[in-house]
Length: 272
Ligand SMILES: [Zn+2]
Ligand SMILES: [Zn+2]
Image (cartoon, rainbow, N blue to C red; front, side):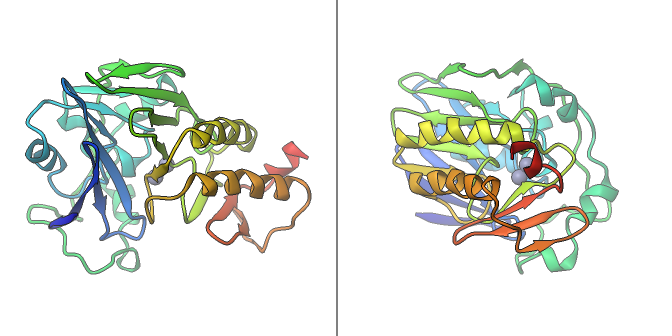
């Protein structure tokens, strides 16, 4: 069931898992709340629009353990509002930096918005995302015990150096953050690393084999485990010589049925 909370849509996925979506922006960011018997985890903290913390507290009274999938601005919006925040060490520094108004504003041009008004108290002319210190680190193979439910962390770099994926074996749900999704796959920024990404796709496919549904951090959710396998197969096709559909100054565009690769020029050659 989906309920609207102004800027946010909250959907109960079932088994103590909720998605907190931001459909008002074209990036369609999703954060997730995962309840254990003792502890509640929150995967990512939104785009910095609206009172994310109050919404989380409404959904679960317990002080959550925040798991940051990575430190891109659209995932760390309310990180500074929480006491317990975990991130991979490769992105702790980025989390600690302020994301200034000028940069935030550039992501909210009118054409990126989809008709949902900004909440009271949000002013695009002054909004910024404050940096914050993580209270702890995430690493590959880590298990996070929430009581009756243990989340498995896998390091999945490629989109960004410290990206992590959360797997919940008790519900067979996979949360790959920005590593895969049904839309553009951002592998064109300065942080992108296609060699690392190829290994990440092997890890994700192994996790997908153990999953019933996949909840990425952008666009339409859920995607299927078969979509994850298709993402790897598509990269293999590109490496085998499939040409781009479009080339711009900063990216090669490879369009597939359910997703689009945006790859920095020169990266594919490293794998050929
Ligand atoms: Zn990202
Ligand atoms: Zn993202």
